View 1 (tube, one colour):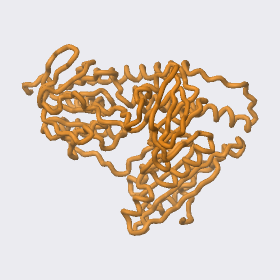
View 2 (cartoon, helix red, strand yellow):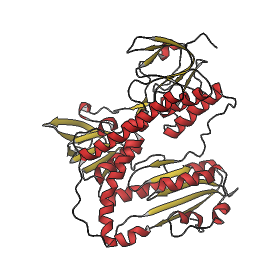
View 3 (cartoon, helix red, strand yellow):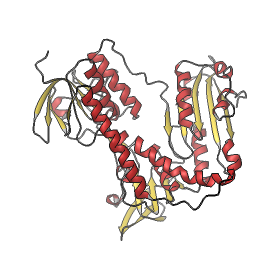
View 4 (tube, one colour):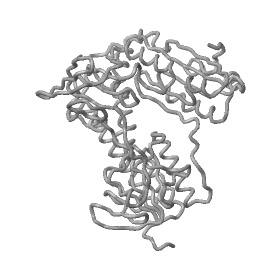
Length: 452
């Protein structure tokens, strides 16, 4: 037993913080968790989960249209934004309750209020004014959207936080950005019937992804009628009578009900008392950690988006689990950041694991490229122009598959399983001798034979 109130105090009730608290409690530690907003964090409350629910909703228009090709005669469908948001809110509330219930069920003490560091072992709970102490402290406060740029009128824009709770669906919306969030929300609003313009300062969206995926998605978005404006920035936004006018750097003006900025996120570290505790941060406010998630203060750790390393929910969960096992279990371990699968829930969907082609060429002396683009079976009767793109990147010296990429329906589901193969070191020969599952899109991954 220590002289502290708790063995482990976790600041932040998102996926990484809750996993760490639960695992530490199962190891017998005296654990507390503090969350100032809602349990579940960005992913559950205003990120991955509600976003994907909205993505599902946005794709039903395609389903209704495609049904005609299969003999279905449907009455005109009507969409009601308020019904979708109410259903989303109900599901999020259910998940939030589960997060808190699981914490309490594991034996953790829960504080539904903001926590700030006083020193390396002392935490102040701001609502109650209570001060508690802990031997080990974990910071898992995540990130928050930023509104970047020097445009005039930024007070008239929303971020993804507000987009989830709009009272009405906009008839016209401008989305500014070119990453996951911008592309996904542009697809959501476009699919739900809003006249949508996606503006990005670069030549094509999703910088860092494989170039074939980027090109394929740009073509697909154009074919679907989503207005994508590239190599332009926003100069200013004015608002009159509830309507926004967006002026671009070339003088073009676009009218919209809403303007959504998706220009990045920053670590949520403001006002946490990091300086008082001696915790060092980087230029963006991110907490600097070592391979064991340990900060510059020996007993303080940090996981997830607050470290600004790999901003993905499963990574935060793994990091939190590793910290709890290492500090309170019997088998210390570190997170392996190789072969992390990721998906963009655009329409069409993208998913990838391993290296994009440009990175593979820099890492290996010689690589082999295998790829195929084809119309999905469903599109043949539906009459749509949808395409599926799949691509394998192979280290020519070892035959090992080092990159696996897909654009098309259920890409995320396919790539999750492909990630297992890549993590096991699968070779192209392993893919080749795997029996195809026919008819499926995924079978193309095991039937590719011709190098590009």
